[in-house]
Image (cartoon, rainbow over all chains, first blue to last red; front, top):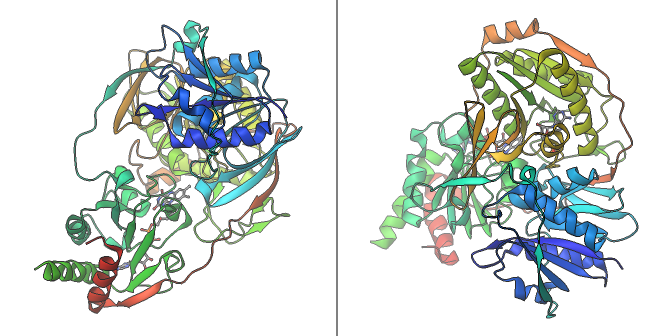
Length: 319
Length: 254
Ligand SMILES: Cc1cc2nc3c(=O)[nH]c(=O)nc-3n(C[C@H](O)[C@H](O)[C@H](O)COP(=O)(O)OP(=O)(O)OC[C@H]3O[C@@H](n4cnc5c(N)ncnc54)[C@H](O)[C@@H]3O)c2cc1C
Ligand SMILES: Nc1ncnc2c1ncn2[C@@H]1O[C@H](COP(=O)(O)O)[C@@H](O)[C@H]1O
């Protein structure tokens, strides 16, 4: 039994899912000890965290905290970890969570385990963590008095405890150095089609599409299905499509109801981005392509004729 | 201007991963080696910065003797010279890798002056530690901005863009700074034949740092068990279209 501190990030007026999952891991590590949740700046949703395992909620405030400042966040976590004398500091394995928790570990000069999928409490905390974007896992011992870790998104269950937690405000102490790195502006994205990350259907092309022009039938099918267009890395490094279309370990991770992969071999780094897809249809001229074991359905053939035939059939049925 | 870029040699895994060394390493016997996509963009950015501002770009790796291959690849793209921290092939945890990199940076800077920018990948392809850049910046007392996809340098400042909330957050930090980059920052060039030939005679400075006790102690690697289901083949060629559309209809996506 030991006290644990967990960073909770807020989106759209409530704690985000990945933070609730991190809180689940924090509860497991505390094994009955205090679970402190820290919310920085935006107190939205703080009152609800007791239901997800927090026993005490801290809302950190500071006049200079007007935008995201990762070193300031790390300073607050590190200070609070000292004050509360916690055995572990946990956070969500999001971009923000990983950089902030890494900064906590750097400040304290202790190990940092990113993207854990399982945690085992003990004098030495043992974790399982994702490597290669989740294609491989590592069991590791965190050899430190205070374990610093994040949880891999959608790998640890959030724990509905139905409890409640007191919310207290925490007046942070910050120096100029803590605020040197902070968001000073925002550039809005150009408005356009369906967002890849949120699309219900994604139609992707790979090297098999052959060229920029080879994407025309893929775009046509995507248009008919109201789908987003994606692609493999072979396509982006050839300059056929922008990197914003890339699906995979170093591209966008998607979770559509349907993924149609055309002329994509199914490399592990590509498949790391489609783990959340409910149904996968592969269109490939090679019946032995690795994607044949990852997909639910397949058509064996040349995408340049198969994809237009599917579009034509959809049009025919719609009349 | 002086720019340093840090790269890591990793096995070019593509299909199912097999393990060796008591499940503590990837069996790379039949694999090639590469650097991660983020780091490729870091190399490209370093080359572009020196093309635009003159000065020198340096590539650094902490890795086995064979990692000279990745250093030469980077130099073939236009990097000026290389620093090789030679290991025995064992993995180094993020803390010890960062400490060795910091020592090498300090030594090089003592002789040649500060690096205006140190570029690294946001996360290494193999271990995905998400920490070496932050530790390097902290130890050197320089600002670190992580996960960036846009970079411009002017008047001693770096303007950095990071994807956020459907748009991009902007950071501005004074140089010298440490920046970790993501694939998509730029489109890396391919090496030219003259580039490859020039790279052969560019200098690599080797040294052999001591590997300290590992504080993130790997116990073993685990390959996830995925049920190898064979896809249901709906047909061959364009004749498969009706079966595909039947399937789409049954999913309710039409
Ligand atoms: C660290 C790291 C990160 C990576 N991250 C990503 C990532 O985020 N996303 C990603 O996609 N990749 C990523 N990769 C690259 C990945 O390993 C593969 O190289 C890449 O996914 C291959 O793309 P592909 O399937 O389009 O090409 P290929 O592997 O060349 O496959 C092309 C396929 O198309 C089929 N084909 C060819 N012509 C036709 C046709 N006319 N009709 C139908 N089928 C046809 C072929 O049979 C083959 O199966 C990463 C690699 C590394 C090392
Ligand atoms: N052994 C190494 N040699 C050189 N650079 C490294 C090494 N390990 C990590 N890095 C750099 O730090 C980045 C992040 O690594 P990591 O913290 O392991 O995810 C990588 O993309 C590299 O740029």
